[in-house]
Length: 264
Length: 367
Image 1: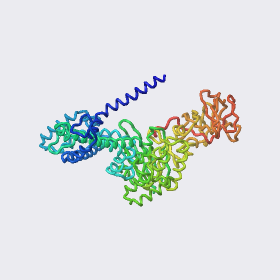
Image 2: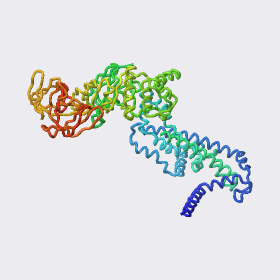
Image 3: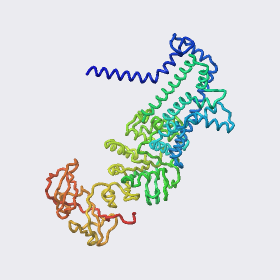
Image 4: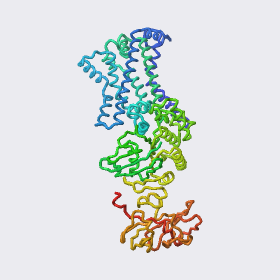
């Protein structure tokens, strides 16, 4: 009896360890070898140094790519949220023709691969004579994040809030005041969740950024060009920084989603 | 502030369904009106039309002599207290109550003072800095009332606001609503399906069914002298006894029922006096039936056997069966002091002045 319990506990704990090792071992190795005191990010681990991080922060191209990534992520997420909110508000609150079809059309891009979207945009920009820049990357990110923002915000709009909007109207608010003072603040948890999720996706996104940028590039594209010249603990260092930033964003997102749920 | 309300021929059709047909109602300034009826009777639709959230298919809404039929809710002199309270979840109670004042461009300090004053009126001043999700249902209720009153409406519309509260709290809120209404003098229109609530708070009850007004009057009138069979049945338990007019005298009408001939005062016929040969329905409340031996001046109705009974605190509620009409089960509320013996036969009597006689079906004019 006792042996059985010991065995089953051992098994549970090993399974637990194995599954998290499977998920996080690659990242752990990446982070570990970013501290490698040597030229190559491969075993054996020679000792700890912060030299590579120093190099990353001293590399002006990497730093400008990091700045570009932040700008693109922030502005495109803002735009995706704004458009997603407008679409959700329109479909939830007004009688529009073919509501169901519009909902499907709005969320359909979620199922299309980023590569196809990037190719499509590339052809379109060429045809329109739009030069590739960070703006075109941003537009690409709005295209992929808008459906997500729409879906998250639309899901949080219920009938109950409709009465709250009616109450605001009843107390003298005009349509714009209702949206700005009541609807948007009331939905803020889900709007923020959509925003931070878009931010994370845009920050990590490579294919669209690669195909739609030219001279100014985002961080993942810059890392990719670094990788072409071979493995180097510096790429591990910048990779660790990207990972850290994504983790922070996810934690922030989790806090907002958690708060939104606990308030209901 | 306060204003009178006139509803003129309000009709509302939804595709192939008529929710309201030709509703006419005059409400005096400062009255506490209750729209009462079963669910689906059109009372909430009527309230939405008065508040401006729906527009009628026909008819006019006049508030304080001004035609408000096509005026949007934001500039009507009305506010609504919603069934689910509809408080703004992201604002403190003070900001909730001050919202209407903010829309009226009142300064920050002024509106905070005014909001506190109204929170005080409903006994919620101490929680002014809290948010709605920290409150209980009854407290949200009070805040919703304060918010609706803070803009000084001429007319407050209450859409089943007490529906979600438990019995004890509901009684308490009824008393508070009534006293607040007396204090501020605003016209209140309150929708409910609970006839006890209606009687507890209303100056005048408007009973609705199937999109028409079935009866309108003071609570005691509506209960004791209903104008339709529907109203009589909806306001509480009632014994219906079918009869036929067999003769007419100057002060009385002779009615033949299963219990024999009864002479009923003309005043009992609330919806017009039938002619000889027409059928009529006698409505007798359970508390109007008593053992006739215990009261002088009572008229015997019938002998009846007690089938079962239960003690309700204020009375014994019994089912009785009369040998003269074995298919009819009568309900009577006998005094607390009665010693009840199931199977016993008693003489049931009543004061003839209490009887109400109504046409068995509503007259065609009301349909």
